[in-house]
Amino acid sequence: MAAALSMDLRRRVVAALEDGLSIREAGRRFCVGEATAGRWHRQWKATGSLEPKRQGGRSGSILDAHEDLLLAMACEGEKDATLAEMAERLEAERGVTVHLTTIWYWLERRGITVKKRPRTPPSRSARTSA
Image (cartoon, rainbow, N blue to C red; front, side):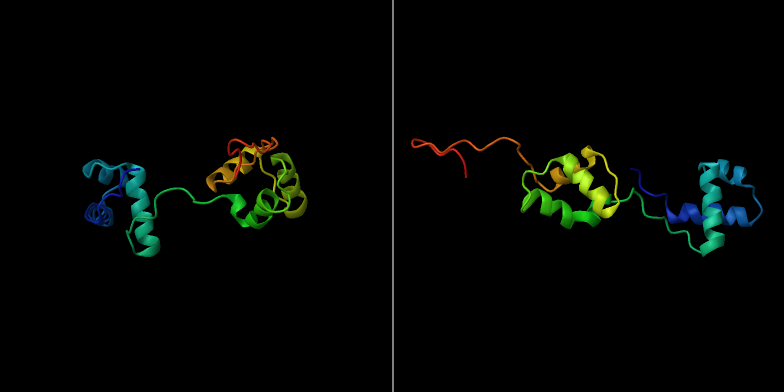
């Protein structure tokens, strides 16, 4: 994502608008979009500040608030819980409806993988499992 435009440019655009220049003229004069000039002017009038707002989307997941339930199902007593069972339990107990892929990505980001196959039986000649 591109960096925010300079405070100097913001001040000059708003000053030109305060001096009577239209938003369209100010945008053309300072080579910024009309919407940008208008947004800066509205921000100046509302808050008295021209500081750029934080860039980027929200961080985190809707499932972060339900971490205790998901980790209990994936890591503790219910190691054989499927993604579908996790989704059903989330909806029943917490009222949260999510797709199975959302749960899968959430678990993957935490390094949790659940294998649905039985462990290899121990071998006398080589180590087969931890």
